[in-house]
Image 1 (cartoon, rainbow, N blue to C red):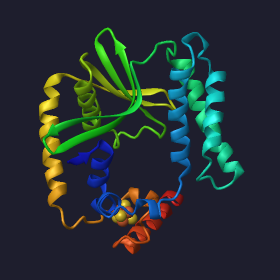
Image 2: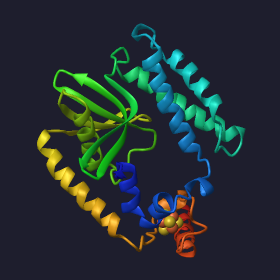
Image 3: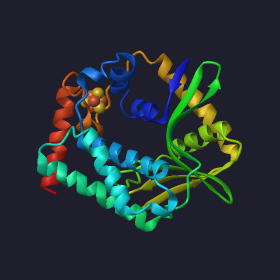
Image 4: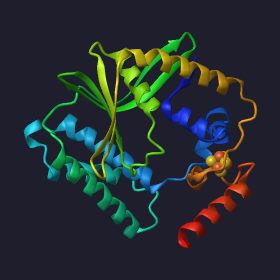
Length: 256
Ligand code: SF4
């Protein structure tokens, strides 16, 4: 069974070589370095999950959420340069959660929370997705993916949202009518309307993409901004070019 997820797909499409290191050679654990934004992002996601699972609607205040974040934070403090850096990331997380409580109706219970869901699209292809939250509105289900990074119009993926909706559709009887990214730093919602006729073309597209991955024997490195956070830059066949590219980008951003 070939397992694919929006995350894996994006990785393959952005850099097939990075995909190979991760999902063909399985060497990610050897090269993985903790990243502050990933640690912070995981804590924000987990504390929001705890907030809905552990706290009664009437008690959902920012102060309670802050305590949940602090508890989660103690479990993993990897990736920060020093105490000041950790504090800065912590403050960012707190600001996001404060805005979240302020701008959203937190008394409403989601129908599904942070979990992995999957669906088989053919006999040997399974699509998996980690869904952050699903709300039930009068129109149907609303699938929500939290983002702790900045909104970047080049990075939003309607296809990814449609895949999440399709996975939920396969696991629920109520139809999905909307799928959104919720950018927590600004409480900005990027949404697409969902209807069932989206699922067939999305499935066909997924099958095509999986076939392309399956026959790929080259996994060409593709240099981009992604190299900045890539754990494999030292062993990448285009290591020198990737570093030169990043140096040039840094020069341009310092000397606009
Ligand atoms: S350094 Fe860049 S080109 Fe090389 S594997 Fe990583 S993302 Fe791909």
